[in-house]
Amino acid sequence: MFLALLWVLVGAVEAAVPVKGVRWWAAPGYTRVVVDLGAEASFQVGLLRGDPQRGKPPRLYVDISPVRLERNVPREVSIRDGLCRRVRLGQFSPQTVRVVLDLRDLKDHHVFALEDPYRVVIDVYGEGYRREKTFTVVVDPGHGGRDPGAIGPTGLKEKDVVLKIAKRVRDKIRRRLGWRVVLTREGDRYIPLEQRTAIANARKGDLFLSIHCNASRRRSRRGVETYFLSFTTDKQALRLAARENGVPPSKIDALQLILYDLMLRAKVEESRKFALHVQRELVRSLRRRYARVINLGVKQAPFLVLVGAKMPSILAEVSFISNRTEERRLRDPRYLDLLAEGITQGLRRYVEGATQLAGFSVFAPSR
Ligand SMILES: [Zn+2]
Image 1 (spheres, rainbow, N blue to C red):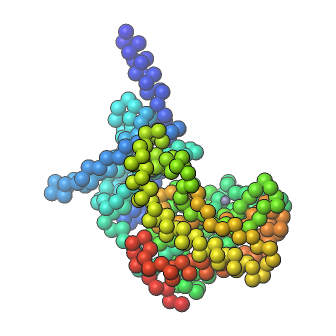
Image 2 (image 1 turned 90 degrees about the vertical axis):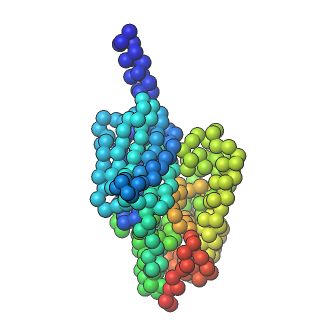
């Protein structure tokens, strides 16, 4: 009887998804905590307001279920320089793991999920999270390290090309516009998606631009296109809303979806304008020296790399590395320079035209 009961309990716990680990990135006024899971799960967010008189700091907790803590996962993680002092994990009930963030203070928070592998991302922003005076652009060269990205017919790797372009963009912006530029990677390093936007948030980016090369099985496909985060169908919107609300898509109701859509729209509209300028200037720059540059236009897609970024965010697919002509061009430093020139001009035109960026007035660049 006792054994049978034990078996039932163990069975219930075994059926749950394992919590595999916890990772974090911290900066003054901002911390991102990522909880890695073995498969999809639901989450619920709760907030315990602090009591300064009793010396109790605010705490944010996230209940994830049905999950169980693996034995090798630390029950407590201390974070020295961040808004979050400590992360605690505990098996709250047989089916639920509670993740508690002990905070110094809290102004804003955002919790969402990413897939493949499934993980829950917890962003917290403190009172000290202020904008820098210097306008900051975060440039994200796609892929890197063990992830080469797309590979061209003669072996050119996307990760190498986009890093070269990003560095040229950085140099041009610093030299000509005087803005601060942060690269998400400086070398051939693998960086998970959530770390890319964590860097953008931690370094207080005003704009986020991810650079990629396109690829297609149809080798004749070529051209330039730029994406902004959005969704093109209700199904995608539903999945994104579910991802951000910690429930399966089947449990999101119509009203939630409408509210979610309204909330996103402001940011999406700024990102769309940003994408339009970069796309236009990329094509204009290439056409100065090259024939048959194809403008594939601005498109929307629910790009995971852009989820969780606090600022207008776009992803530029600067050429098709799978196309022989464009791969050859991507090996030529002059072509890379024209791409970097186009991106820089696009950034500049967008900022000149934007009276407000994410609620902050734009620092006028000295030109
Ligand atoms: Zn890519």
